Image (cartoon, rainbow, N blue to C red; front, side, top):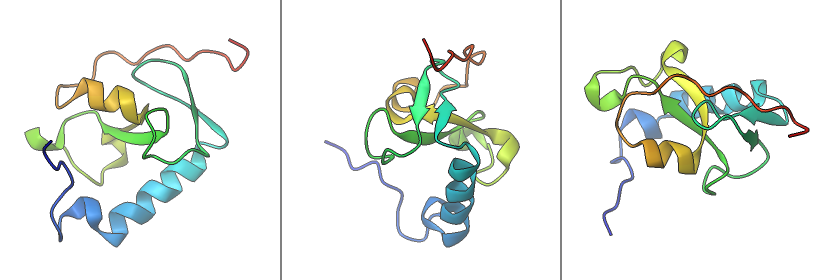
Length: 100
């Protein structure tokens, strides 16, 4: 299995990026909406879990998208973002209501 973590010193490991991501997640409240599948994201879960919150970069950073520009960010489940891979984001999914 390949280690996909960013190398030491990479911007994804920077204090600035981590703090911006923390504030972005806090602004979502208790529940966010995955912009890839449209289902609710439990913002209290760790991002290490498949249904936990994750930042999806709408323009992949591997294609020159900004790591820090919030206009390049959208909320996603970790599993949805992993499934999307490095491809461009499709049209955002319609949010589901909290009642299903």
